[in-house]
Image (cartoon, rainbow, N blue to C red; front, side, top):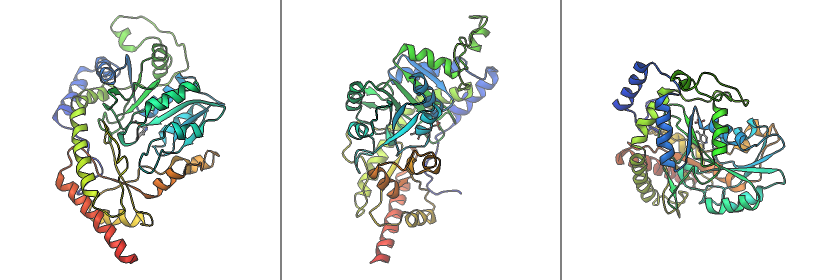
Length: 384
Ligand SMILES: Cc1ncc(COP(=O)(O)O)c(C=O)c1O
């Protein structure tokens, strides 16, 4: 469908095209100099010594948890209001995800209080998600983790280039996991990055990314090494040079695009404040955000499907971020849900995600808000 306002619109142009052509002409297609350069620049942005490019955030999360020693018999606290990959990665390790509720109807991240409620004697780690790009309260979460000797993984899929108290997200916890999927703030089509300040983890993550091999093809090609050993059971989670080349170009404008998202967020909030009963989360947020999503909470009793269908009739694409993970069949069938996360369930039943992308015009934004207002008015008139 050709939407008049799509949910997202990746910003790709001649620089990306040229970067891909250059890779093809170079004939070095995977894990080469571009990947290394992308890792160096992303590491600098994130303030970590180690940034390893991989083929998705899902792979990054899996490697992070395994590198931290998470395995069968362990529990890992995760949010339920996130993409299913966050919890799936725990299950790949044979561990059990335990869902923590979001802090409130306004702050849609898990926090130290809700994490503490989800702890069990078997808890080994916490995975936090900076939902929609809004930072979790990392100082309090790290304090709780230290008190219980837990490791912390940050899922930074929505917040590349975002700082909390001047310190980049992805450098607060033991490991940070980023996504460059096509709808993200910067894209490599598919792709991810795993970041850490801990050198011993860096080595393990490197092994896991490429079959536990001790040297890379590029090093052997360049004559830096003749052979390799396999020292761990690893995977093929490598990034191609095509993806890395896209990443290098996209990185150039990440902060500029995040700023455009911030401007749109402000305009949205001003306009949406006029809609009766509708609320926008993170209303008390101060400081940076990735503004990856524009979620709104519909008034109680409004049928979401009717609103989304009315907006679709106006050629405006909307979505839901997220159906709580603990309600999915693959989770309830496995005895991992439903969880005791009432605020998450309330949000899950009323959230609608509105379009948000850096090249969105103010006219498109006005059309989205007008359409939403009409839909809500129509429903109110029918129920009156
Ligand atoms: C919060 C969150 N975590 C993880 C992922 C998984 O990312 P990827 O598609 O790169 O595996 C996503 C992607 O949508 C996400 O939104």
